[in-house]
Amino acid sequence: MASPYRALESVGLTDHGHEAVLAGWVEDVRNLGGIAFLIVRQRGGTFQATLKKKSDGALFERAAGIVRESVIAVRGTVQPNPQVRNGWELLATSLDVLSEAAAPLPLPVADKVGAEMDTRLDNRFLDLRKPERRAIFRVRVAALAGLREHLEREGFVEVQTPKLAGAGAEGGATLFETTYFGRKAFLSQSPQLYKQILMSTGLDRVFEVGPAFRAEPSDTVRHVTEFTSFDGELAFIQSQEDVLRALEGAVAHAVSRVRAEAKADLELLHADPKVPSLPLKRLPYAEALEVLRGRGKRLRDGDDIDTEAEKILGAAMAEEGRDWYFLVEYPTAIKPFYIMARADEPGTSYSFDLEYKGDEMASGGQREHRYDALVARMRALGLDPAGFEFYLKAFRYGMPPHGGWGFGLDRFVQKLLDLPNIREAILFPRDRVRLVP
Image 1: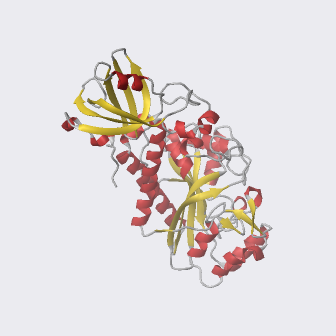
Image 2 (image 1 turned 135 degrees about the horizontal axis):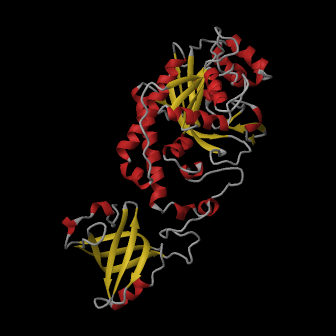
């Protein structure tokens, strides 16, 4: 059965003189003595319901006493009013309170009053009633649709891999351990191992959008413990360049789709993301160190590029007019076991990070597809190949050259909109101290 309530966007001046029933949250109540106005909010915006005391005193008094953020349904006649935002108002003839809000509100919705992040997240259901908060997630939807659309056009298929795993993709202390019917198990850090297994199946171009978990003791504006990862993997590659082209194409298309489909949301959020020109710059690790040294940040060969260094490089690239760029040719020693080492440059790997406005968006590279070399690399890093038998088995029976990436969707949305905190881009974020709501 269709809803009896009209959506705001379905009502207009052509409805002048006709009856309509609209429902929503009461954003404001304005009692001017002989006339009262209810500003009622729906997903698509607000409308004004007008009540005159002389027409129905009981209805007027009832409306004037409604608590803000209560849910109501208003029946009335649509009539033009050029003084309100929509150009029309609803002259109310009846009103039903579907759910009365308690008072006072733990978090203001309509008032231009700031609130601490913890207060907002503790009352996320109210926080998300603010139009600018919901705009973030409409942008997120458009961005994700753009990523998907591009890869599907390129012959990728979407997959779903397990989030309970018997081994970590990267090992170490960033695993959340749990029990699985008496056995040790972990929440998935990444679909990495399963993506690679799929490269041996004929599903040779895959992507996944799903949760990933990192038990990092980080309390920053760019880290959370549960995040949404956009991963891709493709086989029969000629070189790492095949991977870079697939990823940069997806990103450029995502930004383009956001600009096309979420113009009003971008304006509301005062954001103006630029579609990057392709191909993106490839900045080798060795050259990046020289840029950093020239700006007072000294890193030794073999050091990882830390957050401060990322910011410095981001500023340097911005001076060239680049928001996006790839960092390539990292030292093998600081990359995971599955990244392929370069034979022509000992100590260097076929690896990359994708950087956006001074923050890492993605990490990836060409994978080691040769069984003996992969096992040797695992042992060199102190990993026991026996614990990865489910993964290694796929490499014994014909594994094509392949590569891929892991891309943080939440951080992408944060940087796309220049949000101060990654938690703004997640409906119900999880960090070291937050497990509810």
